[in-house]
Amino acid sequence: MQQQAEHIVHGYDEDLNTLTSALSEMGGQVESMIDDAVRAIKKRDSALAEDVIARDAIVNELQEKIDADALRMLALRHPMAADLRRVIGAMRAANDLERIGDLAEGIARRAMNINKSEKVELSRGVARMGKLVKVQLKSALDALLNDNADQAVDVWLQDQDVDALYASLFRELLTYMMEDHRNIQACTGLLFVAKNLERVGDHATNIAEIVYFSVHGRSLVTEALARSESDG
Image (tube, rainbow, N blue to C red; front, side, top):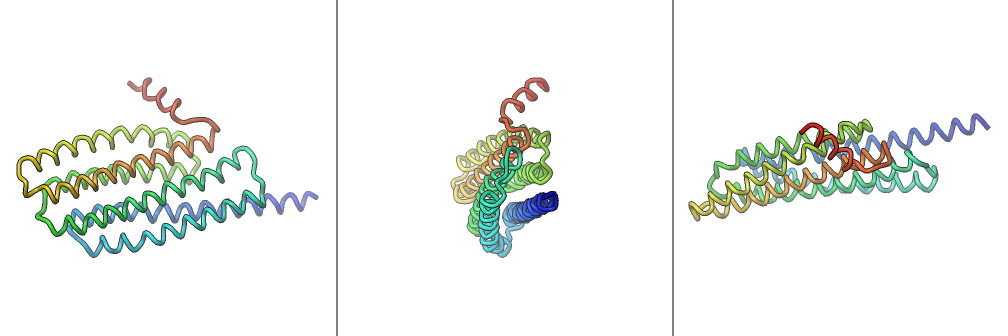
């Protein structure tokens, strides 16, 4: 009986490691897609943008694998409590990562149009926002793969900086468009890109909330607001 129990535990650990590995691969893919999509604008590299678009299929396949593996674990392993939260959390996080992949694809498609227009100086602002979002996403992925609830709270708080930068960039791009109508096409594209990056930050925040709930079984929002007030 003891040997059978050990076998079940070992099998569950292997399944969980497989799930974590697929999440890691998926996270690495979307992280590089966001980085390359923004770089395609900064470097005016449409070939790189096309490569980002093609890689979205890989992300979609990984989500399907994670969902299938997680559902199989739920059916065969019957996880309870924290283990159940982790498996369901993996499915939810994979959904957010798939959406980030879609956003990266959207940025890449917009980059191909922006690169045909005259270069706008504020593309540097978009690149700066891309760096900030990349740091937030990387921290969210680290928290997810390491079950780090404290890091998840930090990620949630970082979203304020992303939102503030987006608001600033939005105002600057509108000013550029009002000053010279020739900037309208390129600036409209950059506004679309900035909005997508802001939404990537929102999905990173979702992942942080998933991590916190998986670890503690309660909402991150209350903890994050309390920490924010004490820091303030």
